[in-house]
Image (cartoon, rainbow over all chains, first blue to last red):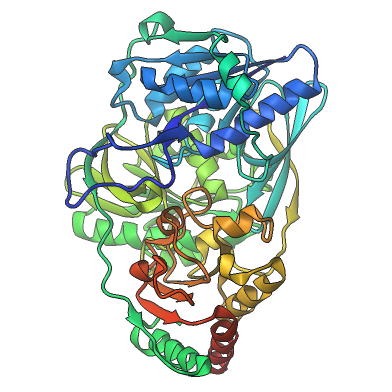
Length: 259
Length: 320
């Protein structure tokens, strides 16, 4: 069995955005970059399947600059992925979700994978599109936002999170899945395994290596804006908590008109 | 003149409110720029309500393919609709179903797909505003294809009645060639009863200040009194006190309700990111220096164990 895990390096969730006024560019130079937290669930699930079976190979696939290799080594290869593929092509700097899905599809079609795993979304652009687009482009079934996975003989059963409950979905392999928090608890890499990860292969490719012309973006970012500024916080002061609660309820009802 | 198609989501014949919000916004745009608003629904007939919120035409497909949601059948039906009718935009609510369907349809039609938008502007071309980094920053995006599929965040647009003609149009997608591979076998209800986080107009969240899982009931009682959804900070979810489906923040759900009440939440940046687009934010925390007060409109510096039950009583009295 062969499993692909498509991952992305993103700014850490503690990152502060430096943007005081609307701008055509966003300064990302000071960002600390980590594996997208949702992708860690995809990596962990693939490794669990590898550990439970025999002859399972796990390949981590990513698109980004050379600097993503440290994240790939530490958070993919050191925790159990067997190899990695990095598509590093400066021509993809302005790629949108559709263009990236086209590139990933080309990479995935060079081999034969039984399962293709993604995180539900990346926490930087928050789009959550690429896994579903790749499935459609490859003509494969997908189950998005899964919180439980059971593999059968050439089939899978997954729990998919929906409003107020879950759907139980079955699909034949090969299939594309997007992984949600709750699916598993991602392990941390050990120091010896981080050292050994340096020995595992990382194939580095460009669009040309994939026989692909750089796909054009279908949507373009024109402007970045800081969030709207908030006014001062109005503190409700009272000796007695019951009085504070009464005054707060009055303000929310009469002034803010939200209850 | 732009024609805007709006997907009217339904489960078990119940329509999602975000559908009416999208119709309202589409009507406001076409009232200024010309063009029509088209409601498109699979599996139920929304004509009466769609007309109330401004739909000029209503396309409804019914039949066995549109019982329980199936991404392959429903995606193909919407793609066929777009190919036949050629709308400028297809708006789909950012719900569990919408987030599944939007990228699927866009990939089929090889067109632009923009997720979780909160603003639409038409000036000969479209500009779509959406948050990134869970709301730490916003971007304006311009689609370059003739059709764009745009996901719309629930509660981003104001609901407004505006009569449309609501003319019922025939819509019979041909799905005979499709044998769905991924199939929903059953739907299991969760805790039930309470409003869903991302669609709620009011959210009450608890953080580490609740001290233990047994005290989350305080949050739920206030939520129930307000008809609100119950949320939680990452600390509370990671401690195992509350199910992950309640988590608000950059690694949980992003919410933008009319009212967000943060109880015993310090306000880590990744939590603030997930709720800062809320229209009114209330912080209840005994630490006056907690960063949550910088993000809040109203604050109470006091122990949540005193204030939250008292506030629940006040709300019950108000609603009495």
